[in-house]
Length: 300
Image (tube, rainbow, N blue to C red; front, side):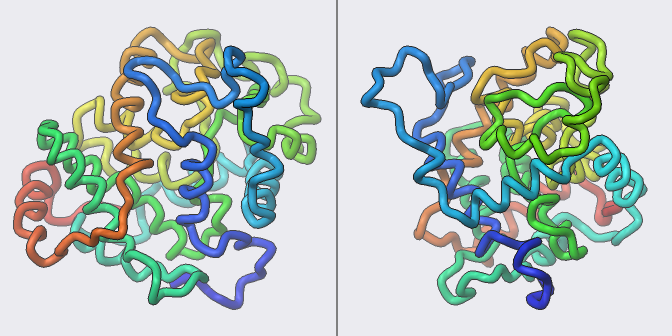
C-alpha cells in the first residue's frame, strides 16, 4: 500500500488513474491504423487547437515537472540496477494481479474501480475483438509493472509518458519546458539528436525513462512473443507511437513492431468503464490463459 505519510510533493496525483485520464484528454481519439496521431497536427485549423497547458490540472503539471526533472541517465541506470535483478518477490501472474489490487491511491477508495478490474476490462475488450490469446494475455498483464508503487517508488518513477534519456529531449514530449531543470540538459553530449546512441541503431540500445513499462518488460521477456513485448515495453512511449518522434533511433524492425504498439493503444487507453467485470467468473478463463504462457511463479 502507498505510504500516505509520503510527501505530497513526491505524490502529486490523487491517483495513478489521473495520468491516464489526462492522456485521454490529450489524445481524445484513437490513432489511425499504422499512422501516429499527432496532437499537434499542423493541418488543424487554428480554432480546432485546444490549449492543453491551460486545461491540465495543477497536479498533473507538477507530476510532469518532477518526472522531467529527475529522469536522467544516472537515475535510470540506478533504477535498473536496483530492480532488474528481479529479486523483490517470486509470485504467479494472478497473484501479481491481486498484489497490484492492494494499491490504494489517495483518491476515495470507495469510488475507484480496483486495479484488477481495469486489467480485465482491457483484456476483455481485446478478447471481444477476436485477437489471439497472446494479445489477450498481454492486455491482462500490461500494467503489472505498477507494483513498483507498492515498493515505495514515487508516482513519477512509475507512470508517465516515457522517452529516451541520453539524447535530446523532443519538444513533442508533454510539457517539454520542464526539461530545463533536468541535469542532463546541461550535458552537451546528451543534447544532440542521437546523443549517446547510434543513428537507427534500434531501441534495444536506448535507455528509456524509468517506469512500469521497462520493469515489466524485463519480468516477462522470456515468456511472450515479440509483438507482445513491444506492447509491454513501449505502450507509454507516446512521443513515438502517437507523435511520430525518435524515428532516427529506431531500426526498420522497430518501426514494423510499432504497428503492434499502435494496435494495442486503443485497448490501453479507451477501455476503462463503469461496467465492472465479474472477477470470479472470469478467473478460470484467464488462469488457463496465464498457465499457457507463464510458469507457476516468476521473478519480480
